[in-house]
Structures are given as structure tokens and as C-alpha cells.
Amino acid sequence: MAKVLVSDSIDPVGVEILSQVAQVDVKTGLSAEEIIQIIPEYDALMLRSSTRVTKEIVEAGSKLQIIGRAGVGVDNIDVPAATRQGIIVVNSPEGNTIAAAEHALAMMLSLSRHIPDANQSVKANKWERNRFIGTEVYKKNLGVVGLGKIGSHVAAVARSLGMKILAYDPFISKERADQLGCTLVDLELLFAESDFITLHVPKTAETQHLIGRETIAKMKPTVRIINCSRGGIIDELALIEALESGRIAGAALDVFEQEPLGESRLRELSNVILTPHLGASTTEAQVNVAIDVAEQIRDVLLGLPARSAVNIPGLTPDVMEKLRPYLQLAETMGNLVSQLAGGRCDSLNVRLQGELATKDSQPLVIAAIKGLLSQALRERVNYVNAAIEAKERGIRVIETRDASTRDYSGSIHLEANGSMGTHSVTGALLSTGEIRITDLDEFPINVPPSNHMLFTLHQDMPGIIGKIGALLGSFNVNIASMQVGRKIIRGDAVMALSLDDPLPEGLLSEITKVPGIRDAYTVKL
Ligand SMILES: NC(=O)C1=CN([C@@H]2O[C@H](COP(=O)(O)OP(=O)(O)OC[C@H]3O[C@@H](n4cnc5c(N)ncnc54)[C@H](O)[C@@H]3O)[C@@H](O)[C@H]2O)C=CC1
Ligand SMILES: O=C(O)C(=O)COP(=O)(O)O
Picture 1 (tube, rainbow, N blue to C red):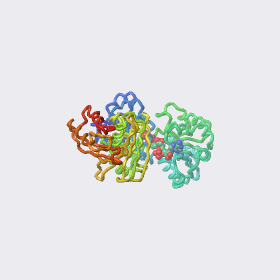
Picture 2 (cartoon, rainbow, N blue to C red):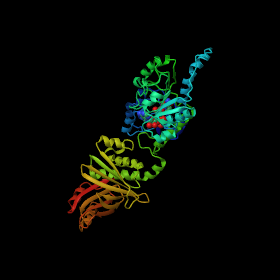
Picture 3 (tube, rainbow, N blue to C red):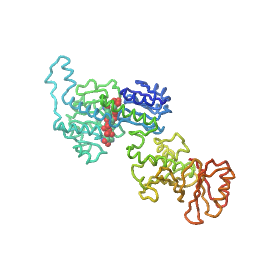
Picture 4 (cartoon, rainbow, N blue to C red):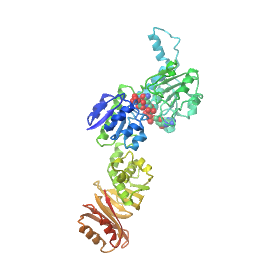
């Protein structure tokens, strides 16, 4: 039975789902060393933001198939290391959107009305009505940095509070911003005009210290900053200085450069509200993310695709349904062309034809690469690491799409250049779903792939087919099917034979000695 390690606390519903297919061990609070010790036993790892999945943990996880983040941000996982090792990383892109957005809004209103301090004051038997004069958010400018799922929901609610929304997100169109009732602006303007600024971007090299000394200098002295996205997007030291000097009015932070927050001057500041990374901590969100991620882990352990993988192309069920039969075709063609071209391929041209000439068909390119590398890497190559393995081996992959078709609604043409020269194959599917090799080195043929195959390039002349048949017969090799393809009479031709038995040692060189045979290849599919 498969084993799953759950290393952060998740809703029990997640454990229930995982238990359908695996032994589940919930062990929270482990150190990196402890995880490295036990991870080799596990097929899957499920976590939230407390576990840091380092390269060392990934590399120790020799059986790991999937790492599931029960939440959005995967910045605590070394995704490139997982990808290199062929481990799928999944998250729950929407399960905690509302929770995080509501937390940011709660932070904004708490800041503007001094709720936490006022609460403390009353509990300390005081009645300080004059100390806690607030500001209204009505008609104020809210700067939303990152207009994705959480940012959009924050914007929608804030608009209903009567706020004007200035949004910055270089990946969002003006049309989308208009739809959301937001004014898309550049960062300079957002910093200069906002009364409140709320951050909803992922942590990347570009967003690291997006708010720092220089950017704070551009803000209004009355600005209040809310960060419920990731620690490190704000330079904490610069923020502390600005708060201490009164350069800005306040800040509300749910996330920190170091978590848990260690010793920090932030704790001493009165114009700051701090929460311990609670954005996703609602009952509803925790149920959502636990179900979402546990189901994906369960599916992957059962050999099914994951719906929210961050390191393989995302596919809607509709697209997946259409592509599924073609994935095997692409992989078989990749495997075939790699054996014809020989080892050390330096380029692979993938042409997706007919109904496959759409942008959704990217997984077929990955499948073709997986097939190409399968001879060299065997089960080490999968859909996750195929592209990166090809890149690291210096294989240039060129994709083209051609919507025109000849005989089949969709076909895949591959051309590879390797140590045995440049070779090409085309494959298509019959209406029954069976694979046909329809083209070999530009010669038309029509053969099903089989375990043992023999291909020849020869001169089209009387008697040559009989000679090959006789030679195979003399070595007791049974021919299952045979096809000849040629472009012109008595010109060059190819022969494709499906064999019931592997070619015995030495037979291939005998075949190449037959007069008229220019080249011969054996292939195992
Ligand atoms: N505090 C908490 O407990 C939680 C925090 N989060 C964090 O909130 C953040 C946002 O999450 P979602 O809205 O779900 O993600 P999302 O992917 O839907 O939205 C992120 C947006 O940021 C934009 N973006 C990327 N780089 C940018 C840049 N350099 N400048 C401006 N915009 C940029 C993207 O175009 C996208 O629209 C993530 O960092 C996530 O980890 C999410 C859930 C809970
Ligand atoms: O989903 C996210 O990105 C979060 O930050 C939530 O973190 P958590 O799962 O509550 O540790």
C-alpha cells in the first residue's frame, strides 16, 4: 500500500480521502533532518506553509510521486528540484481565496478603526473614546497589488464599501480590470495615490522587497499597508523604520520574512496589527483545500492526472478527454524516432497536424519528448521532467502546428537528428483508437506499432521482399505484418515489418548485406 506523509495540520477530511488508497501518517512539527530520515518510505507528501520542502528533502524522497500543498503558495517547496526528479507538485488554487481576501479586508477595517488596540484597552478596564478616532474607508483609494483571485475579491468587496480601486498587475488586461471596476495604474501612481495598499502577489524574484525604503518614500504619510500575501514582499526593516518615524500611518501583517516571527521591533509598534499567518485559517477554507489536494494525491497514486499541478501543463477535463488517446500515440512515435535516429539526439521537431494543431495540445509535445527519452531514461522520465531533461541534454525541441489534414483527423509528425542521422515518422489514430505509423522518412506506410519491428530502406526491385522474408524465416522469426512504401516505381522504398519474435543477434547485419538494402533498423516498442 502507498504511504503518505502529512507534515502540517490539515482538516481530517483530507486524511479520510487519502486513507482510501494509502497509509497516512500525520507527523507535524518535524525538523528538516527528521523529514529527510523518513521521506524515503513515502510515495506522497502533503503540507501547508509550515513545512519547508528543500532540495535535500526532495532528493531524499526517492519514492515520492507527488507533493501536495494544501493552499496556494508553493514558495516553501523547491519546485525546480521536484520537477527535475519527476515529482508532481499540486496546490489548491481557489480553496482559500475567500478566506484570504476576507482576512485582508478585516485587517484593513481593523487598522482604520484601531479595533485590536481598542479591544485591549477595554479589557484593561479603560474607556478611551478619544484615543481611538478612526478613519473611514469610504471614498478612499485602495491600491491592490496583484489582481488575481484574492486581489479581485478584495477589490469587489472594497468597491461595495465605496472605495476607489487602483490596481497594479502587469499580467491583467485593461478589459479584465474594467470588468472588476478597477483602474489599472502603474506602481508609481498606485504608491502615490493610495490611502490603503494591499498586497496579493506571489513571492517571486520580481516581488521580493517590492515595498522597501525607496517605494515607501513615494507613499502618502497617511497610507496604511496590508500584507496577507507573503513575507519578504515587504522589506520588514524598511517598514519598521517608516512606522517608527511616522513616515506612514500603519500596517497590518499576516505574513513575515521569518515564520514564526522571531524577535522583532514590530511587536512594540502601536500602529501595527500582526496575525500569525491566518489568511487561510477558516473552517471552510481548510475543508476546501484539504479535499482539493487530498483528492489530487489520491488520483495520482491511482495513476490518474492531477487537476492543479503547478509543474505540468494544466488541462481541463474536456481537453484531457480529447488528448488522452493521442498521448500514447505521441509517446510511441517519440520512442520510435529515437531508435531510428540513434542515441544522442540534438533536435526534435514536433509537428501537430489537423485537429491537434491547437494551443491546448502542448502535452502531446511533452509526451513525444517523454517517448524520445524513454530509451535513455526508462521509468525515470515522466510528464513532469521530460522537458527539463531534454533541455539539460541539449535537445532542441521545435514545435509547429499545421491545421491541414490528409487522411486522418489528427496526426503527429516527429523528426529527430541523432547519431544515426535524421529520421522522421508520422503516426495517427484509427477511429477505433488503434495507432498506425503512417509515414517513415517521408515514405507512406500503414502499420501498427508492435513490440519488435524491422524497418529497411531499400531499392524498389523484384525479389527483395522475398529475400528478407526468407532470411527471417531461416532464423525462425515470424512476421506478423509487413508493408512497403515507395514514392516512385523502382526508386527508393521502405519496408516495415512487425515481428512476433525479437531479431536474433547477427541477423540485422545479414539483412544489410542483401543486395539493394541500403539500411536496416530494429526497433522495440
Ligand atoms: N496569508 C495567507 O494565509 C494566504 C496567502 N496567500 C498568498 O496570496 C497571494 C495571492 O494569491 P492568489 O490571489 O490566490 O494568486 P493568483 O495567482 O490568483 O494572483 C496573483 C496575481 O499576482 C499577479 N502578479 C504576479 N507577479 C506580479 C508582479 N510582479 N506585480 C504585480 N502583480 C503580479 C499575477 O498576475 C496574478 O494576477 C499568493 O502569494 C498566495 O501565496 C494565499 C492564500 C492564503
Ligand atoms: O495558501 C497559502 O498560500 C497560504 O499562505 C496559506 O498558508 P497555510 O496553509 O495556512 O499555512
